[in-house]
Length: 193
Image 1 (tube, rainbow, N blue to C red):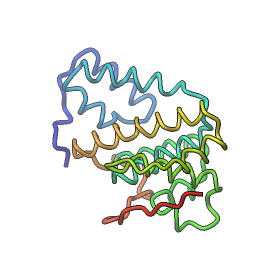
Image 2 (image 1 turned 90 degrees about the vertical axis):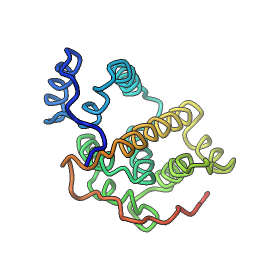
Image 3 (image 1 turned 60 degrees about the vertical axis):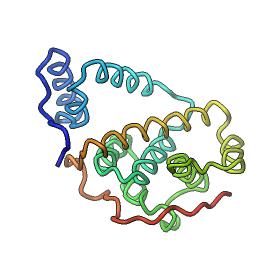
Image 4 (image 1 turned 120 degrees about the vertical axis):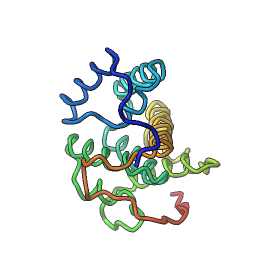
């Protein structure tokens, strides 16, 4: 159950946001409802998301796997639920999306680069970031500096989303029942290439 009311004041901004959300996603998104209690925070967050959606130096599939790996590491069920829907909208195979919480055990599902990206997302997401020089160097060599900067920024943005949604107590909104984060996940081991 959410820790904050999901019925914010019905301001013009909230009515427009609800209309857009229903049109785009088929329902009003709970994070928007929670943010709706503070119009300035909501507006700033929406602007950030709009601008981040235009970043294009990193392959969209890699970006999505990084976001999902960060959300899984934080254990944000809302983000995993929505991420499943987003991945399917992008045309990503269901198996790739569903296996993100256990990507290390998913033999043959992910390329070496995809595994590096998810390892980086997890390392960045640790409470004390665990990114190593070797991991960053391997990614810069494979992706280039512009894409590496974008990867770092999208993981940081997902940390914001997942941590806020988890703190608000938001849970699955019904986008998927097949991409659940296993309960009691142990800390992630490092596997630098």
